Image (tube, rainbow, N blue to C red; front, side, top):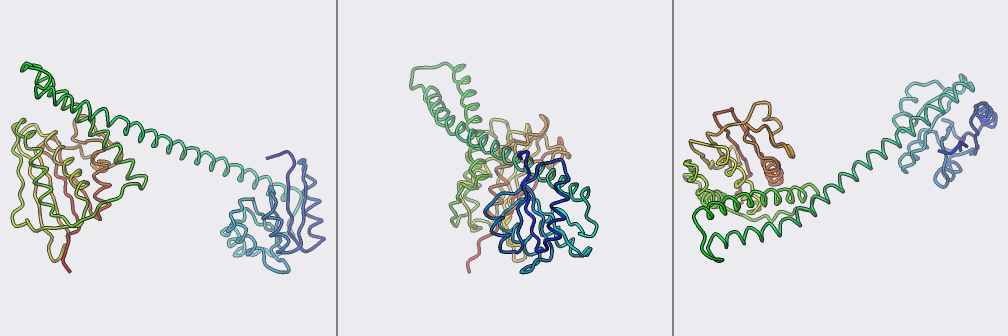
Length: 372
């Protein structure tokens, strides 16, 4: 804001305009005043010039001030508007403030002090709003830059991780020469760690796509049991390695179908079942597939374990972005957040019940497919 204030006075009464001019010039601030006597002239000035504040008479010859205030705001003009009127109607005052006026002054109670106080208050509020809007915009831009940076980094990381993983597998298979049992165990540890890192990178990239509206689901009719059987078969060696019983209970559900993205749903259940195995030291991991009914057209998939469980205070935040929980709780950062995003995109829900040292139960509900 420059040292000289540019003020527009809109009033068809010459005496009233003169009074406002005199009161404004009584201030210590240098002021340049422009005047308009009707609605059309005022609109042309407002939409083609810049002012620091606009004083509007409520009773104009060709339109009332309320209409002008509304139109100014509808056109996106943010300049402070102060309405002057000869009527002290509180209902009119409320309507003006709702429409976007910054203040409402009664002409018969006007004085240099009151008018300039209203002007200074309006200017201070206007500057504060501009600063807040600028700060918000900068914050949003910074957040976008950070997300773009993360997207680029994760994309660049994924290729070398996949290459390194393949090289390690070839070493394990003995392609580069004979290796000892101890070396095989070391390579297996590295492969497992590498796969965990790759999963984290993939999850981060998927979260970025979902949050930026770049994720397009490939929806087809599918049998959810097929996905669950594939995931259980893939993760069974991990369960056996820990001495856990992994079971899928899905009697009379072979024909249960839904409309969904096969890869995305596979990602969800790989995460849920994988977490159950990871955070269970002894006991079992059970998956239950419950078909829809006439009363409830949702397929329910429950993944329950006898693991370390989740603390009660963490449950409300369990599906939040980047929530990692305490070291004692079976939470898994981006995985559960991404799972919720995917289930939401399918029109379903995901919920959890848990108790420390007794295990957790994750329940996914998805709309069932019905032939019409």
